[in-house]
Length: 160
Image 1 (cartoon, rainbow, N blue to C red):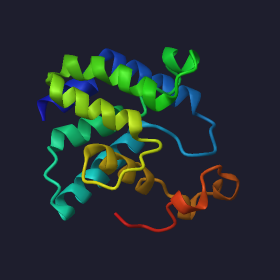
Image 2 (cartoon, rainbow, N blue to C red; image 1 turned 60 degrees about the vertical axis):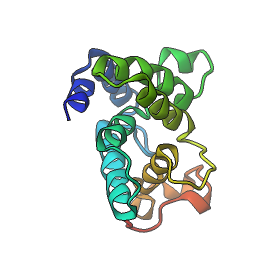
Image 3 (cartoon, helix red, strand yellow; image 1 turned 180 degrees about the horizontal axis):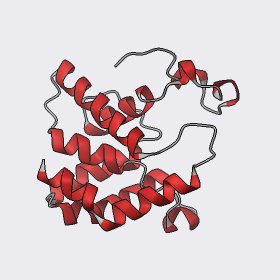
């Protein structure tokens, strides 16, 4: 998975990851760390295998690693949502990592929709949305009672 290693080594990826970690240091709600991104990737890969979706592993990992890059970005400061900003940032990083234009388009679409995806299909966007929600440990979170997430999307059990 050379392209995934290139994402992890990318200077912009590393810089934004550090910025997110610093901004969320004392956050009581879900954080958006590299650990979270890896959990999303692993859960998405498990679902992909279990359901036979046939989505390429590098597309899953690359998308998951980059899905929250828009948090605290210059784009978000300009009023853009983190998922929209993340798609813009991801496009540049994915290009440097060696993904082709078609792959980048699919991955950035998934990142751009990961917060409010409403489709029920077997797309990368649907997979990212599901894995992102399943990665959250609402069932054991001390902040869960005051969390703004609607009850119907809180992860109340260990599924993967």
